[in-house]
Length: 289
Length: 289
Image 1 (tube, each protein chain N blue to C red):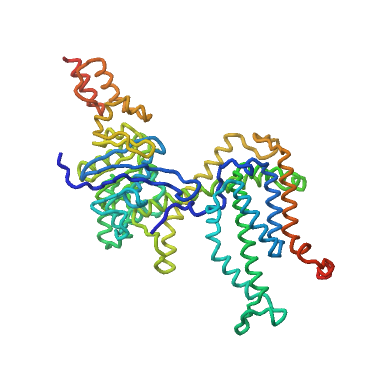
Image 2: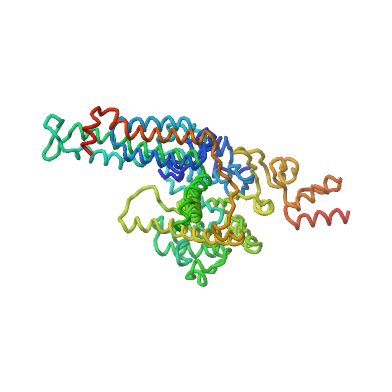
């Protein structure tokens, strides 16, 4: 498989919070991870496994200490010469509950915050805001002058996503960004993310504990436990490994569990299903054979 | 470089669960001892007493199993102010005789008394900061407020709302780390969008404008949190202090009384060592009063 130069290459990364105090806690204990261009990589793991710490290394919010290396788009983040804001422009990071970062009164202004920080021209800013709003499914004319805090939760989250997209990043890192949305809002949000990846070719790092979300978005998966990568591989293969996953208190999505069970019963199932449609097809095949 | 770990450099108010003998003391006793020693550090004016106090503080920190370098880190934020205060003190003492003057320039006179005052002031504040740190290192917020509530209860007769005061204090203290964490999160989110908190360049207006993206989200989440707290209290039928019993029943053991006695003796020693022991002519001192 030819993938070219990695966009993100993390090598034996370690990180300790509150270093040098009696309260220090080790978050990462030597993590290796690679993200290739146009890939959608998932990261899963229990709370406290180090997912967020890892994500924050990807855009230089946390910098690697002497141990471990983080290379983003060919630049070593430990190098003090590297302009960190240029990295932040390349790697868009969306946090959990990103709507909590909104502060402008008007939607358009909030989305324009990022581009303005980088000193872009008014025209360029406007163009980017328009594009970003379109990408998240908020119509520019209707929403640009709406009051930020009058929007629904789902809409506000889309505004927050647009605020990051307006930087035109090459990589989008989503850290549990779908949690707390209602089913409809969640589906809409996920569909936008999928479009960004499949249509716009954006490289994705999708951090989540929702196995269905991971199944519907990612190609490859890393499982973190206690600050280490314990499993990695194509999403489909990992979701066929029910027993290994359960060791880290994770369970494959229900559809994958069904096909695995059918396989165990000796029925001819070609592959682990990741979507309801795939599972349906597998069942049809069994019934018709 | 930006540093987002806001709590790493603040030691005052931090609880360290080391389970030392000091941790196991009755919080009421600790509060009384704390007040006594506070008074001693403020009233004690002689160098011997203050030095003794400082050494006692260091000894207590060791007894509380707090790493000394960590406790001393807490002095760092206050250091510029302390030094300023000390420098002012240096020149505050008027020379009684000409032989006292070490160095003089214009109206400024450096005297032996001034140097002594400056050193005593530094040690006094150092000891006070360590004392406050020690109390919070060894006592968690719940114990502290329970202790304060019990101690204030006699004053209820004159209309002091002891329970309410304790509750307000608990909530306020509990919110400090939460706010710090939220601040950290918002800072990281805005930095991901290109906000620059690392340097202090720009004019006043620009600097104030840079605070908006932090303060507005912080205010909003705080208000939401306060509302949720009100609801949570209402749903649990909270009606104030009247007729409430306590889950934690404070009980003093012999060790607590011994501690109280030691604290009282120490207080007398710190205040009195210079006045009574090192000044042989007690009569002269009394006349001085």
